[in-house]
Structures are given as structure tokens and as C-alpha cells.
Length: 167
Image (cartoon, rainbow, N blue to C red; front, top):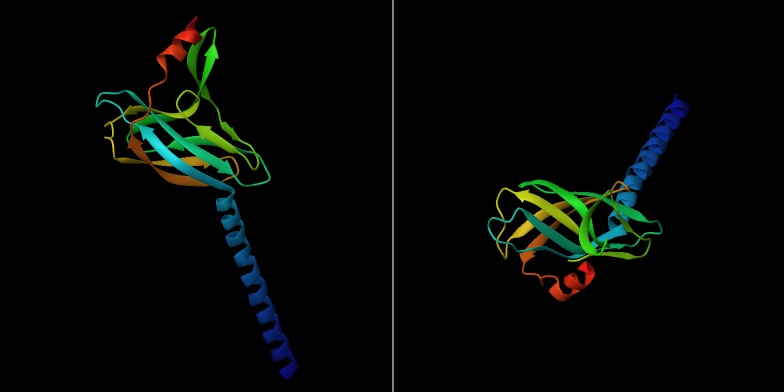
């Protein structure tokens, strides 16, 4: 009887030990995933109260050994958010909707006016300078990050550069 009880106790202790080890694995992986992506300097360009579209910009760093894609961005108070890239096409600057934004392994993707950006379409209310907009970023590695982008003035694109691209 003592042998059965001892075996039962040892089996239960083994089960508890294995359960504890398994329970910590997802936490470690989740912490590693969170560290894989960092977002710096998120901001939204200020606009007049009747603006139909705003732009969000930031730097997204990938600290992992694999390329990662930004798949989408979401926030409340807008009809939709789209991933865009400004390109020169047929002598004109055009904003082209993208299915994703690539972030190279151990690299950085810079979202800035005149390049990659998040298009924020049809705001219910245009935020004022100094406000913050909460944006959720979703990546193809299963990670999502919620950031606060400060609304501030941004430089308008250089009109001379725009004219040069139109000719």
C-alpha cells in the first residue's frame, strides 16, 4: 500500500512539474514575439476639421531572424484604414494600396510622408493637434501591437519635387 501511495505521489508530482514547464513555454514565446517588433515615433498628420483622409506614420523595427509583414491597421472612428505606398508612376506621384508592408529581418520599415504610410479614411471626427489616436497593428507572425500616435503638424510634400515628378 505504501508503494502504491508513493508511486501515486511521485506520478502527481511529475505531472505538476511537466504542467508547470509547459505553462511557461507560451509565456516565453509570447515575450519573444513581443520583442520581435518595436514601433517608434508613431504620429498622425494634423488636418482641417473637414478632412476626408489622414495619414499615420512611424518606424517599425523587426528584431527577429525572419521577415515579417504588417498585414493591417485598425482603429475606431474611421470608415477604414489602408496600407499605402506613394510611388512615381507615369510621371505622377500616386498612392497605391498595398496588401502588406514588408519589414526585413533585423531591419526597419519607415512610414513617412511621400513613402509608406497608413491611410486613415473618412474619420467621424478629425482629431486635433495634440490628440492621440490608438491604432492596432496586425502582423503575419500572429503578433499585434496597439500604439498611440500623437496628432501633430507634418511638413507638406515639396511642391517642386511633385512638379518634377509630373513632367
